[in-house]
Length: 112
Image 1: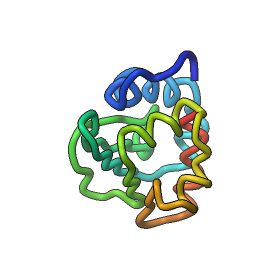
Image 2 (image 1 turned 30 degrees about the vertical axis):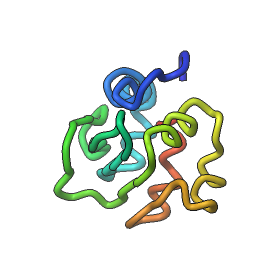
Image 3 (image 1 turned 60 degrees about the vertical axis):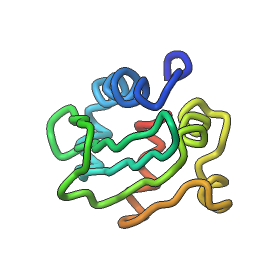
Image 4 (image 1 turned 120 degrees about the vertical axis):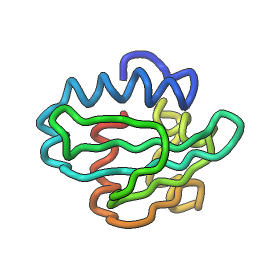
């Protein structure tokens, strides 16, 4: 990712749209909806829809998410900025995944 994300909002409004735009082949291969529930003072809820051409990001709850990611704002930023390994975060309970684990594994292609 070009530069470090300064906030969770920055990830979903700036960095992730760039990644989706730069990797249309990855978006079409994923072909699913993700829900991100980020807790903490800088958290929020966002959906990433990879079923639409080029992907789409929206704030709020997704109706048809096949994979839900739960994490604190600090841990999420550390994962996105490469300071925390996502697999280690998952194993230590800092990152929780609900739904399709295969989709969770594909997330790294658009997050980092």
